[in-house]
Amino acid sequence: MLLTVTTTHRPATDLGYLLVKHPDRVHAFDVPTGTAYVMYPEATDDRCTAALLLDVDPQRLRAQRDAFELSQYVNDRPYAASSLLASALAKVFRSALRGASRDRPELAAAAIPLEIRVPVLRGTNDLVTRLFAPLGWTVTADPIPFEPEIGGDSRYVEVCLTGELRLADALNHLYVLLPVLDDAKHYWVAPDEIEKLLRSGEGWLAAHPEKVLIARRYLAHRRSLATTALELLDADQRPATEEEEELPVARKAPLAEQRRDAVLAALTEVNAARVLDLGCGGGALLTALAKDRRFTEIVGADVSSRALEQAARRLRLDRLPERQKDRIRLIQTALTYRDDRLRDFDAAVLMEVIEHLDLPRLPALEAAVFGHARPGAVVVTTPNVEYNVHYEGLTGMRHSDHRFEWTRAEFAAWADRVATTYGYAVTIRGVGDPDETTGAPTQLALFTIDTEVTA
Image (tube, rainbow, N blue to C red; front, side):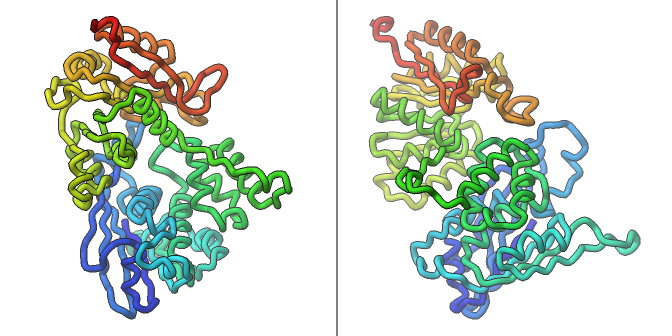
């Protein structure tokens, strides 16, 4: 699927500074469903176009879907713009979405002439116009015809948007409205999607005449989430009272951010300096560890070479000064096998990892991590299955790759057995807003070597 952004602001090649992508190169980015490319089919002082091309891997796309059905194999996902393209846009143009530009800050804050083209988008001329025209766009949405022998128009349109806007505003419009027009998302919609909607819709969504439709479609028609989002939007529109103006505005962090903070707090609690991130994936925790100078040696380990490549790009290892780069290593290894490279660390983290293993393989991980590697402390997080009742529309596990999800009692029993077997003490705590009946959404166990046992 394809999206192009064109400007005639002179010099037009300044678009490269705003997108933080050099016009003379082809840039490639690994995303969960394939590979995203950014390239410039034209780049002159008078006119510059940046193209975002998402090459969807059918096998990786299929892994995102839960049900075993024909639509896993026969669908329009690789071609029609959707939440897949919106997610790629958010990753590839992260700085531009925030309106940040180190090299051209004045230009990032200014409205410039823009032309956005999306060759294939599910929708109608009427709906595209209703969504984009109130935001200052001139909209052209031409129906895409069926093959001549079939006749008539398909349910897709070719869209061209023209206007004079800040680039950040334009990209945020696309990030929200592409999945709204498609009316589907490739991932399960959790409550933290409300924050994404409000953040990307800041400054325009609250006053949009179609805000109800936008909230409902963006939040996958989950009534409770849409109602909450609309209430928050209405509160933003209401003038604040004198008392409210004096109060600080509290931002509720997404669960993933709360989980990372809880892990970092646990590592600080045990005074860890040399840390293993086991099953590091794309490097979300590694990035947070790298920013904290208290961690003098950081090792990310994963069985997937693709995940390690993604982590390296996220950490920007190729651009780090040697002194910073020397703190960080990435190694490929299976956590169910003993690996001497993982021995003698202050702490190891298994953040949302164990539930991805088949239960019969879990003892092998226990022996490799707690027995052979034997770090001074181990931090383990995993979902609390009891909390799943609060996720409207969730009928199975939280992720299609989860092999199990435990209750609080099951997790506590496992943690106690591992601690007793390998000579650790363990404490368990919740992460996220707790419910009186079901507890917190995430459960965390902090294992520390039991000095009385080892003595």
